[in-house]
Image 1: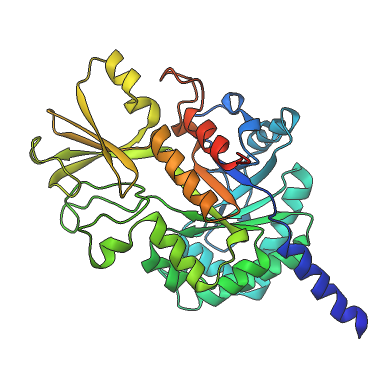
Image 2: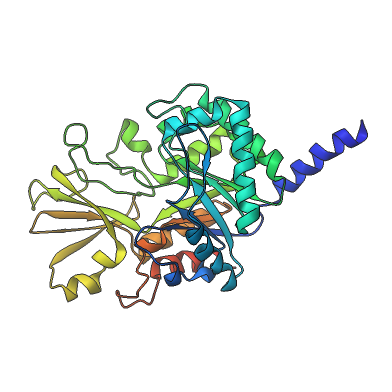
Length: 369
């Protein structure tokens, strides 16, 4: 009787204390980005994304062996924790969690891969339980069952991290804080992609990752920011020492309807897709002889640029990521998450050295003052 009680108590205490110390996790998107360019000492955790998924019958699909071998070599260059992000169609995740046997098999398959490869854990990137096409209401509780089974299989020797939606409208439907607190080593809020252009529903420009609401935002729009997301998760009961604050290194470009009407929420005629910091930093635009006006929005703690060619771009710079990292530190969170490595200026083209955004985030988070 005594031993049956001791193990759960010790397990809970061990899990509660696993996130002490600052975390800076960095996503490494495998496509068109050589692992040799990564500076592993910048991050405490590096997460490989884009090479593993849940298939249509709920099985774990591991990366190609050559990808794994190159990724694991990062450990030879710095004492960094390596994780594998498991992505996939939301309906495939629903299939995975619909059966206890399927979840057990997934846990066995993933653990076998982790043990064989030397990778330290997995990152569950399900976008999103309950919310997406093909989802079920039971996803919310069954996701907790999946995390429980993974933790039972992994024990404390392997890490389990979870990526959760930024928008509060999704958060309240998709997750329960109790199982995140109990089974995840840490939980990463994807505090970006708040503004998505749509020619019918949302034909305007907007910030990718605003820190706080703009004064004139109302209703749902007033909640589409990082501060509102964090407040929502904390009110749901997510522990701060489990919470990692997401900071993007990319932004989005749009085409304005009128070049002279260029404030946030100005009418747009289309989206030009994602942009990296090295595409829009002042040094690069000057080199390309592109004349854009740089603006700063104080509530959003976000920069934007616009030009006579009707281009409007929301992006991140050293000032914006400083404000976001300061916010995460002031909130006494477990740390920060960066998406992603290749969207920073990894070649140093902007005259600030390599990885200026991530270096800035790290200096703020790890500053002892």
